[in-house]
Image 1 (spheres, one colour):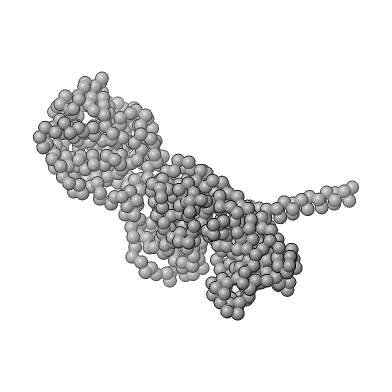
Image 2 (tube, helix red, strand yellow):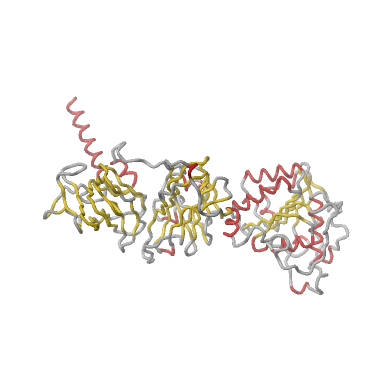
Length: 580
């Protein structure tokens, strides 16, 4: 019975070891198989040869030795898959000066897919490793080299395969000095919100720092974060200021399906999340992008010797898309107090506005050419109304036109959710959250309210209950169904005299509404107005009804002017400034 149990255990152990070894795709990984004095399945160049006196395991190692600066290589070909992969090799060095000993993964057309950092000087056996995803670039070449250097390097036990399987082959505690990824599990902001529909999901605000790399066709997987038509800004909050030695983002490229590596990956650090210093700028120079294949590249800026609590990565897109699946930030061992910056600080907020092709004051009063208008409610006896005016991005001119006719000190906010509920950008969320405490009235046009994050929506609700006014211009009920409770708490019949003295029947294509022009309500101490223009005049895309050229009968006084008067009176009523 005991003999039978031991036999079963032996078979199980052999099967387990066999399965683990099968994870390694490299042929003859320990150079033990020799043909004609050279390692089978490997091609050698330069001064590379077998050495049976120096090896990590088994009875053979591979040695490269140079008396003068030169390059030697050993290459083997393996079939790859679209998975998160790991390449590793044990390396020993002696007296190396120059670029050093390293391991690279190269695609079928010579494109560099991944590389380890080089080893120089003297070192006992230590493990070089690098993660990668070769995409559909197949087969790949594993290259060991002593590059542009003098000295000697020995290689042994080369491993390439699916990351999880290769890690099972690595001896515990013998992987060399580990790097601490201080970004792992940390929160981050994305500006603008992810927008590539094949990979955008609710996990986009966790996936870049979850430690999981994408498996499969990169830009169709939910583990990938993608943007369409925008160059993204990624801000990671490390929780506290610390020394930073390296920053990495993993992105696909190669040109297949039009997906290219970013033109630039620019890395910044900050202590306050507003003033940032640039610490590195990487480009895809040397990475093949011929449109035949795709693969990923780890854009790693190393040996930075910098510091900060916040790390910002700006991907300057090439083509129409940007993608990434993981960001890593490596803690340094230097003194952060000794770090100084040579570059002038840049404003994160200004950079975020620039992503949308605008400046912080682009839609404020005075930044547009003034048009003929009637000053219906400006100036006000009690001073300007403090407000937030939010409109669809294509209709932000409406905001400037309103500001010419209404005395309002406002924060202009653009959204992108017209026709479909697109996520409200982090920049816009920050604009609203910053302005809410002093805001007397918030005016929102053509917006899917379900696009508002729950925490921000709660802040808006709280401010209305405290007395802030809310004016919602909405062409369809489903756009504001997310906040129907605000309009239902204490409804007011009729127009409450808000539109008295405004000749409503003079509005273009006017028709009598079924009940009233406005839907009014109180919510706590706040006043709320719902305005649906098409109930009595032309429909609106955002804040104002459609404007036609035939509306103009002289420079200013035309029927469309009465829409501004109606909106101004509605805003003042909601702000509880109707006595101004």
